Image 1 (tube, rainbow, N blue to C red):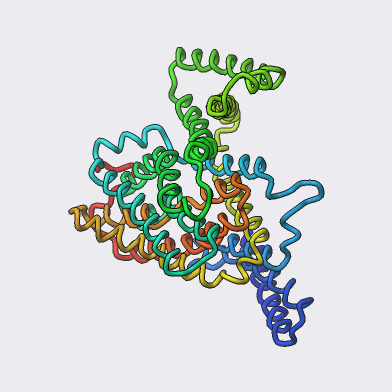
Image 2 (image 1 turned 60 degrees about the vertical axis):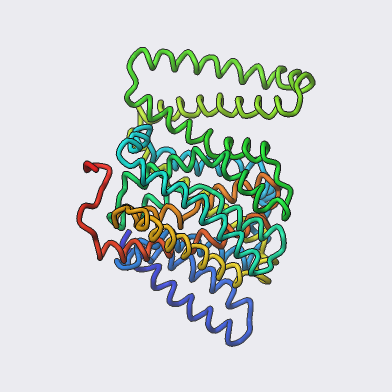
Length: 431
């Protein structure tokens, strides 16, 4: 593998020459394939460079952006398959969130007993600083309404697993980080549509209940499936029997829905009740997925280690398709949107840290809150934009913000790691 990585570094050097030659001669037939080849080969080869290997995932995000900007039509449709189809987007974002849930645990919520103050500060900062900063930036930089709504949307989303990874790298308070992420995820179905209604309601139509239901589908449902798997790892015999009975009910229920019941109920129930029934169906499906995944886990115990790679693939997919769909918009506002991403992200780190210190949290906990506030769940924002059918506009901010958040988070985490504070708290240590 090391030999392959070094070989790819050599290919990237040759590709860079081809890229430069194409730029200087003004030949797209040279610089376009050169740029893609350089990005791909460098993303593979970067693992051979010790100081850069932690940025390999970010390098693949850059590959997605470069490829989609140069060859957008290749990432919009594959044959008869529309890569922007909202059901396909929904399934992939659920896969991303399931991967996130696999890295979480029901026991994460026990951190509330020891980190209650920090959790309250983290949640208050996260759901105030970032949406308000997004709103302020849309007033300063006059984006088109749907692009501006996308900036507010990503600021209104919960934090994701990236914050936990950065806190771990920084040797900060990992117990607090995991607990804040878990609580922010549970709060998102209510707070995200509320904030969008208040701050972006004049930019796009925001249907509070519809958005809440979509967030439950794309976030809570897949994480619930992962939590069922986590529960079954330690469940008693009676608990497993009860689970088996519920599994049978879910199977029968979904089969009946598919054969005849859904069509009949759709004619009998009002729209609100149909939305609730749809969410219930998703939960029954998630129960089956969680149970089936656990059966795989019993046969292949290492499967949990590979699921995060599916999440990474999902985020790369969103980035690629969103960039391809919004290429024309990015050519007009890409640099300005990147500047906004830097300001937005930096404000999260700055205010998250110093407000935590103002409320007398220790330095490690303040560093943790900085990451929890500054790093948003780009997959959730992309998924919501996709279900709205506005991936090319509302989803554009997530495509630009996500790569930068990974880069800035890694840099800050390594900086704080070199300036570690005594008393770091991990999941294996006592707070």
